[in-house]
Image (cartoon, rainbow, N blue to C red; front, side, top):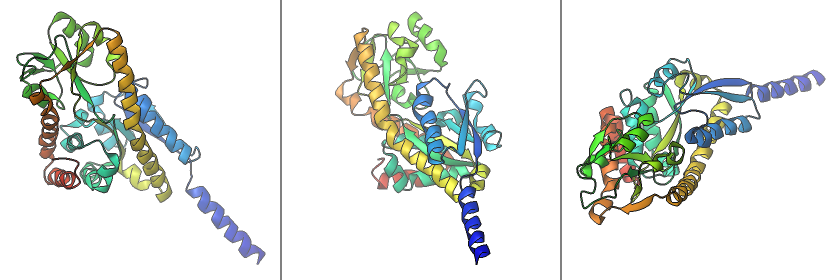
Length: 324
């Protein structure tokens, strides 16, 4: 009887230990450790995983100084790194489907309940990656920083605007020409007139000091952007059910927090920019009413290269009211 009781106790103990075995993972980040995205999304996720696992699951963060952002997906696919913190624009050539998320409203709960998240995840699993989190960067994402105020519709006619795959459809739709330019070159390009403006997220202008060489912020703000966390699929499959649950709980917690967090940061930054001489420049109504459609349509057009799963994802988004 004593032996049976002892044996049962040992089984219970071993079971409780097995779900919290110490694990250390390596995460690649597309941004440096002190950058806003990393500080407000990657690091909170890492901390939440550690908290939920009682310190048994830890994640080491490596940034673009280890692997350049546009080259990070392959080493995670190969298992050299376990996790990836990124944006789909960094791997459009490999998997365009992630940009479809930028064609949906900033509602992480509805993205999951509608099936949009799962369909996207199904596609990435075919590439050896498990989608863990899609965290919105605020309720709205973009504006233009301009040397001169917007004009009559089309409100950026004839201008040269630094763009990316994400907001080039808006630049073209407003009559301007997109210019490909590395981020570190934007300040000098604005200063010398090589470009007339730049599409940009709502945070980061303060640290880049673009307000010194451009005087206007376009309105309305438009579009959405999200930050993605993936895991090597083999590493994911090797986790225990309890470890997977910890990762998923940390992901949902992150997704529920980032929108308000980045909205607050954007409001603080806008106040700083206005205090330092920038002005708001409102688009004509006919342009203002179209900018979100331009960017959402562009996102789905890019995502469509992923084929049937992208079409399924778009239909799920429409049915849920996440997209038109």
